[in-house]
Structure formats: structure tokens, C-alpha cells
Image 1 (cartoon, rainbow, N blue to C red):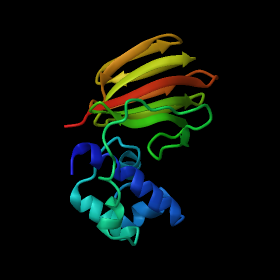
Image 2 (tube, rainbow, N blue to C red):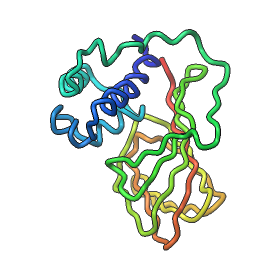
Image 3 (cartoon, one colour):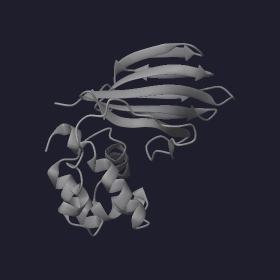
Image 4 (tube, rainbow, N blue to C red):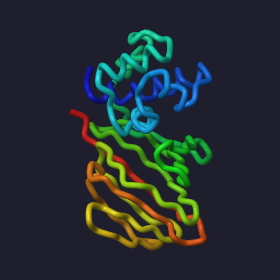
Length: 191
């Protein structure tokens, strides 16, 4: 199974969890996997190890085969993909209180896994440093945000953009009384 196929496992876990009416917190309690890691797996920000995947499958009362079912059934590469207005999936992440993610695209294309989202950051919100397995690009659509990347404090305003290695734990903060909106692109190469 290649990395492109593995990136589909998170979608399968999320679908099964939703069908069974389980929250991330409940699945975390039953699987022994943190809710933060489950969120990253479901949203294609990391790929689970085999022991973690087995724990998740058991907690879902599913077999490993059921969790990875249909993962390899993609036929070829798509030439393009479209998400129409209003079709983006809304997510509030366990590890990012005060942030709402609207996923516009979450696809593999030409050997690159891409997740493109609009992120809304509530006023006076601070998200502690976390990392992921992606390169991240950020464009500020509205408002202001402060990123902490290693020892650097970076102030970004409307129209500013930044590109960085998401593996470096990074914080973000909206110190204003208005909601800030970002366009975020997460990308990693399929090997």
C-alpha cells in the first residue's frame, strides 16, 4: 500500500466513527489514542502506525480490513478536482479551540497530498504550538494573526503570506476583537 493510499485511511476512520455516532473523545478513550492524534489522522495531517491503526479499528468494533476497505480502489490520477461553494467540510479540531476549518479541497493530485482550507480564528484566541507532516502556506484573507515558529514571532496582516515547514511546532494567536480568516494550504509529497 503506497502513501497515497494511506492518506485515505483517515477518511475511512472518520466515516466509520461518524456512522457509529462516536465523538473523537469517546474514540480516544476506547482506543488509547489521543484525540489530537485522531484528529490529525482523520484530517490527513499524519498517517497512523500499524499498532495505532489496530487500536483504532478495535475501538471502532471493526476489523483492520474494514478500516482500509476501498483504500486501494482509486483508478489513476485525477487531472483536476473541484469543490463548489458550500461543499466544503467544516471542522473544529480538538487541538485547536477557537479555530474553525472549512476544508475546500482534500485530495492527492500529481503525487502531492493537498489540503486547502479557510481557517477562521475567533477573537482573543491562542493555539499552543503543534506540528504536522506538511509544508504549510498561509495567506491572511481578513484580520491579523501572530505565528510563533521556533523562537520567531511573526505578525501577519490582511494580504500577507508565509510558507514554512509544518513539522516545526508553531502557535497562532488572534489578539484582536475581530475574527481573522486565513487561507491555508497543507502539502506533502506522495512517495
